[in-house]
Structures are given as structure tokens and as C-alpha cells.
Length: 179
Image (cartoon, rainbow, N blue to C red; front, side):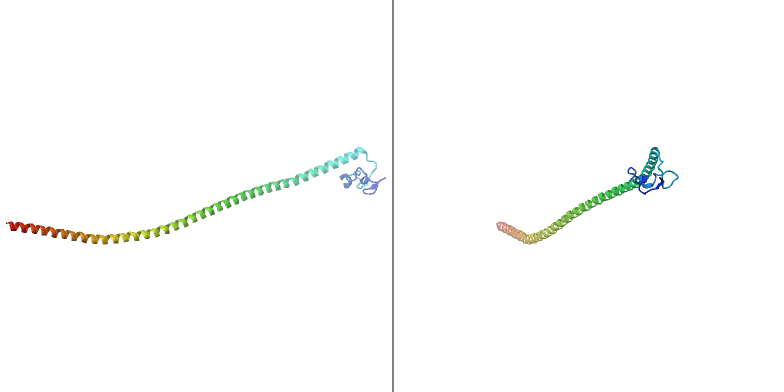
């Protein structure tokens, strides 16, 4: 009762083998009889074939998953490195932005102080001009008074001298008369 795989009644259609890798691969047949099923396969032979197939399939899956996992692990490591690098760059950018903002605030403060100092300087210049003018006026008034004072003093001295002279002349005259 030899039949081909996939034909109803073959091992591939057997309920316990249906959907297994053994049924899909055609491994349920005897060795040396490609594609032809034999009813003389013992249960132990079938178990051994299934086990062999399962082990080889498991090993190939394990190998392929290791191969897949290695690049995935490498990709994850690369992604982690890129992410860490991006995080460092982001932190650096944030630090630089904060530093620029701080410098802008400092610049604004200094600019405001410069404006205040300029305004104070203009105010002081104006006050200095007014005080300078006031001092000049005081000095010119003082020189007028000094000139007038000097003339007054000279006149007083002259008058005193004249008075003295007159007195001394009068005294001399009186003395001269008495003599």
C-alpha cells in the first residue's frame, strides 16, 4: 500500500502529523524511497525520524536566531551608542543654548548699565557747565569787587596819607609858629 505524499490516506494527511514540519517536509517516508510512503515504518522508527527532524530543525532555528540575534544585538548596541551620542549632543546643545541665553541677559544688563552711565555722564557734564559758569560769574564779580576794593583801599590810603600829611603839616606849622 504505497502512496505518494499529499494524497489522501498518506502520512502527510495523518491527523497527528498534519501541520507538523515532518509532514510538510515529506520526512515521513522511508529512506531511499523518495516521496513513497511505506506502511512498514515502525513506531520507533517514526519517533526517531521525528526526533531527528525536530532536532535538526531546532538546531537550524537556533543557529539562525543566533545569527539574527547577533546583528540585532549589534544593531541594538549601535542604536544605543547612537542614542547615547544623540543624548550627549542634545545635552551639549541645551547647555550651549542656556549659556547663550545667559550671555544675552548679561549683555542686556551691561547695555542698560552703559546707557545709565551715559545718561549720568551727560547730566554731570551739564551740571559741570552750570557750575563752571557760576564760578566764572563769581570770579568776574570778585575781580570787579577786587578792582573796586583796590581802588577804594588806594583812595583810603591816599586820603589817610593826605590826612596824615595835612595833620603833620598842621603840626609842623603849629610848631613852626611856636618857634
